[in-house]
Length: 326
Ligand code: PMV
Image (tube, rainbow, N blue to C red; front, side, top):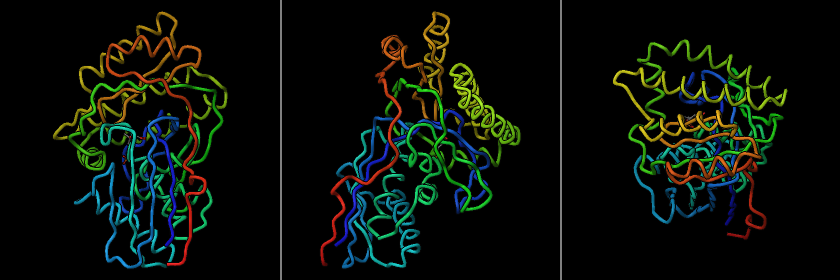
């Protein structure tokens, strides 16, 4: 029996990934950049089960079925192809973030699964190869392989589309959870609809490449203010291109918009934060480390506000990999 356990943390994009150029390989239409967090990890154990005829997947103590389980099996099929194995696997995962609420649980989930499954199947992958593998499960997972700030370059094919670390000034984040309900439209479906129907989509693609170039310059210059300005305007652009779909999709709730407004008001008072939101109503605010606690306290009226810092990349847990004769 071969078992491996890995832990990965979610990341929040400052330059968003929204749209696929290739659905099968999960190649994005543009690059993106994120901060991997030090909270809300997913821990996943993969155990090869040669005697089984099918994979099993349990999430938070419940056996998953339907599309959730099928997605894990498709991912494991890819790992099996790389490893030249036909062994089925038992996957047991626990997730400290509310699943499906726009807190990047799929990013931590597939980064942990890629790391654990590649070890359990005996693949020896370097970080770029692990990032490419995680990308096949969920695009944003490519970035959770990397600690701290990660740039996922769009690349032009499977081998060139992976995330790597970027030097940046230290940033903290306040995660304001205004709603923990599962989102109504998955990011996969919403990306498809955006590409097919949003008239702003071509401008989104070209402006995102520009935002990424500007963001990488701002990170290199250590310019927190510029990083924040790009973060906030890019998030609102993503929500604009999504809201322009037919039929429209709106992820931001009134409470989310209220947090954006509060963050702007706090900036005017000298607490420097900038808001962003993924495909859900919750808001993440990047903040200078010295303003983190004041921002968290000021935003706690809007929902649970948690102050987090930069986190580690996905990693195998020590002593968790064991091999014993079957
Ligand atoms: O990895 P996915 O398919 O769940 O897409 C995530 C997309 C956003 O979270 C909205 C943006 C991003 O770059 O993480």
